[in-house]
Image (cartoon, rainbow, N blue to C red; front, top):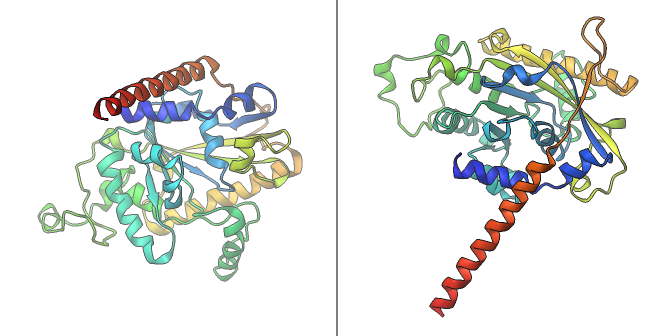
Length: 335
C-alpha cells in the first residue's frame, strides 16, 4: 500500500460520525437499484447528482465497507475543497480540482486531460467520481431551467441539466471509443508542446493507453434526502439534524453505450439526468425509488466495520504519539 493511500485510509477513519450514524440508528445510508459490485476490478466512471456538501461524505460512508473502493477512487471536485482539512488528503491522493467559471473552464478541461494520464492511469485508479451538474442544485436550478427553456429542453426540478465537458474529456482519453478520436498522426503529435497547455479537442493521447485502461462501466448514482431537504456537512459533523436516511440509487451502464460524438454524448448525459429527475419525483412522492420490471423492491442498509475503525484510530493515535515524541526529542537536543 502506498503511503498516501495509507494516509487516506487513516483520514477516512477520522470520520467517527460514519460509525454512530449507521450503527446507532440515528442515520442510515440505504442503497437500491443495480448492485455496483459488478464494477469491482473494472475502470468505472461514477456520475452523481449534487445537492449539498454532505454528498461526498455520504458516498464515502456508503463505499467505505466495500473492500478496495476508497483507495482506488479519483474525485473530481471544485477547487475550493483543496483548501479544507480534507483537501490535504485529496492532494496526497492525487484527486483533481476543477476550476469553475467560463474563463477557466477550457484550461481546467485540458488540465483534467493531463491529470488522467499523469495520475489516474499510472496509479491504477479504478473509479472516477464526477458531478456533471457543476454545482449544488440550489445554485444551478434556475440557470438550468432558463437554459432548458431557451434550448427547448425539459425543465428539471430535482436535478439540473449536466455539463458534458469533463465527461467528454474522460471518454476521449480512457473511454472505449478513444481510438476513433485519436486525431493527428504520431509525427504531428511530436511537434506539440509537452506541457499540454494547447486547447485542441482532438489532441493525441499523452501516453499509450492499453485496452485494460479503458473505462468499462458507467455507474449512475442518484442521491436522495428525505423531504427534499439535503444534509449539510455541519449536520453530519455535529449531528444537529433530526434522524434521517440518505438513499443512493444505482444504475449501471456499459461504457460502450455512450456515443463517441459530442452531440450524442451530451444527449446521452441529458437523458440520464432527465431519468434522475423522474426517479427523484417518484421517490419524493412515494418514499422509494421505482424498481425495474415487476420484481420486489430490494434495499441494502450500509453497515460499517467498527473493528476497522478501531484499528485505524489506534494506528493514528500511536503514529501521532510517536511523531510527537521524536520531534520533542529533536527540539530538546537542538535547544
